[in-house]
Image (tube, rainbow, N blue to C red; front, side, top):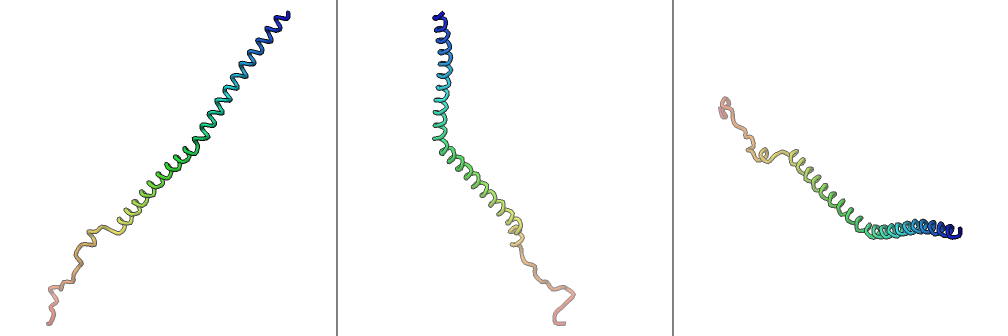
Length: 98
């Protein structure tokens, strides 16, 4: 009877030990992963801000080009300004000096 109890306790101890060992291994792996991610966050944050800055600069350049194109279109083309100015021509029915 004593050997059966010892065998049962040994079996229970092995099952509990395997469970505790697996939980400890998962905890260690989680801690390593956490430390790795924690050290990589500043670099990722810096990359994200530089990407946002690049998009903002491109959007600002496009907006400036659109405003310039709208202002140019509103002012009229150069052909209208370069044409000859209208001159006063005398009418054939009116003769000066008579």
